[in-house]
Image 1 (tube, rainbow, N blue to C red):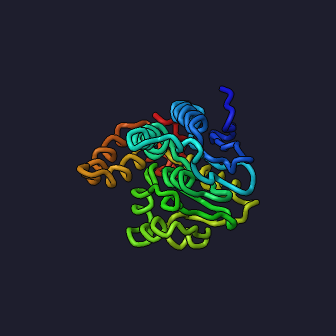
Image 2 (spheres, helix red, strand yellow):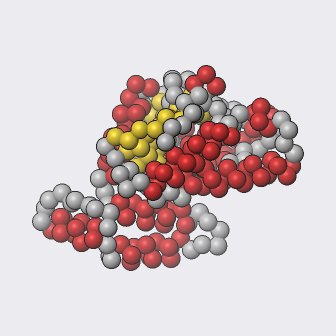
Image 3 (tube, rainbow, N blue to C red):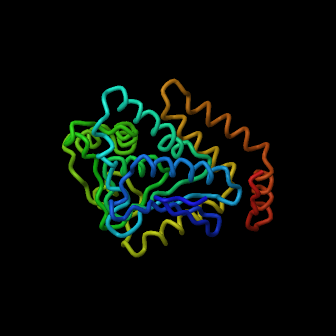
Length: 260
């Protein structure tokens, strides 16, 4: 499928999604969010794709925020609908995806851009990247899950400081806070993302999906994450991949998982 605002490419079972609005610092407008929804649905349902890496075009920005010009005529009701629909269609879709998603943060990740990265399962950053949630400077708050996911990752105090001051943090700060797991040079960013993803997707695909579901379950009000883990653990015993993994371990060879 041809997109106008994003680029997609599949190599070595990895789907690369690049937000391609460099002149707009890759800002998220409605059309881009719609294309991201389609691209992720396709990737999650494509058996040839084992994992997804998302980044921004150019060296300046991952995503420098939402397209604020589209907010001008919104009122309370339509603003809430915008947040709800995009959370469901893009941000929650990514967070609950059945395949691992890595955000390669190549530059500014601000507002909706940081929220997009937060929805991904793992984040790595170029050493030049800057991150922040500046919504309160516009009389808004983060509306795409930022108040929740940032708090889950770095704790209430640091999250509130970032949100209430609207200050940007450096990649080094983000690593210290636990917001990202690796910081590398701009030139090494995609290579590091690929290295990490290739290691992940060499593991059993059904087990990866089960692990994502189990970790997410512990963050949902009213859901017992331990029970989800037990259930998912039990289901793994019924897979061909489990039998292959055990056989490979006992035979001292590399497992060849089929996702069955």
